[in-house]
Image 1 (cartoon, one colour):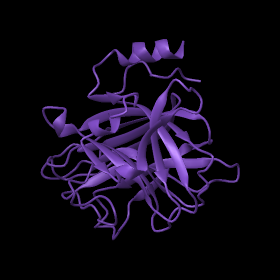
Image 2 (cartoon, helix red, strand yellow):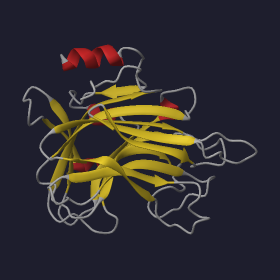
Image 3 (tube, rainbow, N blue to C red):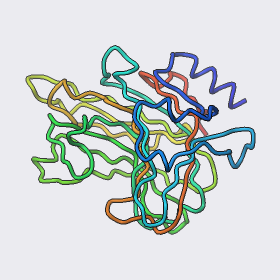
Image 4 (cartoon, rainbow, N blue to C red):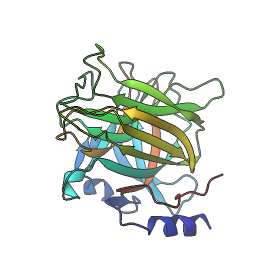
Length: 262
């Protein structure tokens, strides 16, 4: 029944990009890849007939690999609004007590908006996902990590960590959705009227308004950025991995949620 609902909802609009990682060459379909040695196609632990993207983070390392869908390669122009969904399965090996990065949106243009390169409204921005250290219940808090337009003015080197209203269990699948609208531009100034929302298994878990990431229309949504990284500065305390499946990118969230509300 869930598959029928999902197919019906997603058929309401054509995707910009999608993959279910069933093809052994699925990784090569992305527009940019970093640390491909950490990426592989693996069997779904809950469904032996299904495969997913496996991302490994090795003991003492930071990188779990990175894949990007560059919107300029799939649309007439980079958009100012975008939606994507994916399924996430975190293995019980994920034992970190610190945090790192998860998939989200990118607009760095290789200039600013990541890695301690602060945004100033004209050089770049990003809104990746984040995970924090395991909580007292053994779950993993998640959220958004935002490099925004006021960082230089606020003397910030790194982005804002903003938690969602959920912590994820290990060894189970979640459907994660994110949608962003960049702020409007008037007189070379961002209006701070953008927003960023996230859902987990159909439930709204984050609704960030008054988002200000740009002061020029040259900054748009450059990519959907599947970035898995441990840190900050702390390396991974063990060999860890997670799975990503069923990536689906579209201009806006389907009017019918891809997952029935619980």
